[in-house]
Length: 330
Image (cartoon, rainbow, N blue to C red; front, side):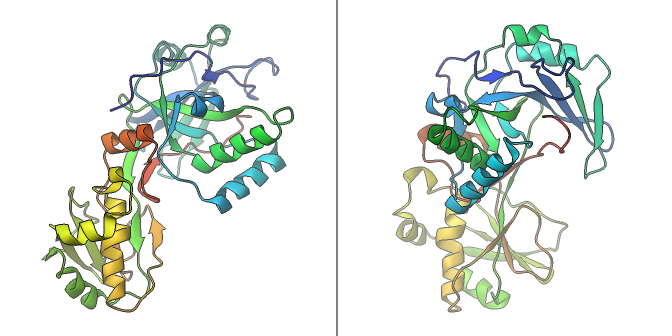
C-alpha cells in the first residue's frame, strides 16, 4: 500500500515553461490524456516540474535500481539538451486538488493531438493560469519510469547546483482512477536447449506442458518456459532450491518473480547445459523461435513495499506505462 507519510507537499510539482502556454514566459501546468483506438481513456494526468529534492524528503519513491552506464548516458544527454524533453512517469495514490484541475481543464478543446503507436490519440491541454498561483499539494509518488534520468539529474544538480536546475519535467497519473499498465519483464535465454531445460526444471519444480495459447499470462507463483510453439508451466518450486539460492538477497525479494527467475530458475537451467546465463530482457512476448522464461507480473503492493523499504525491486522486474508520446512541451 502507498505510504501515509510524509505529509503532502505543495512544492513537489510546480508549473513549468512549456511552449504551448501564452505568453511564452508564463509557467503553466498541463493535462495530458491518452485514449486507445476505440476512444476509451487509458491515461490522464498532470504535467509539471518535479522537484529533485522529493527523493531526499521521501516524496518520490523509486522501485528500480540504476546502472552506472545508463546514468552516465542520461547525464550526458541532459547536459547536451539543457534538460529532459521526455517526462518522468509517476503514479499517485491520489491527485488531491489536482483532480479538480484536470476535470475542469479537459472540458475545453485540447491544444495538441498526437497519434499513438497503438492507433489511439494523445491530447494535451494548458491549465488555467490560476492553478499556477497556488500549486496543490501532492502525497508521496511512485516513480514508474525514468529512474536513470532522475538519478542523472540529481547527480548533476549536486555537482553544479548553480548551473543545473533542480526540477525535471514529469507526468503524474492517478493510477487508481486511470491505472497504468503493469506487466513483467521477461527473459530470453540465447543458446538454451528447450527439451533439456524442461528436464532440468522438473528436478526443482512441478512441470507440465500447457495447450498452446495466444500469449498467455502466468498466474502468481507460476512461470512459463516457452519456445518453438510449446509452453510449459513451472510451479511449486522446491523450497530447498529457493532457500539455497536466495539467501544472500534482501528479505523483501525472496518471493518476487524476477529474483526467483534470475537467481534460481535460469541458473539451474543454464548450469546443466554449461551455459553462462546472459538473458535478454524484453517487455514484449518473445518470438516463437526464442527460448524464454515468461514471468508473472508483480503487484502494486509489492512495488510500493519495495520502494518504501528502500530495497526496491530486483533489476528488470516491471514494465509500467504507457510512456507519453513525444511532442513540443518544453
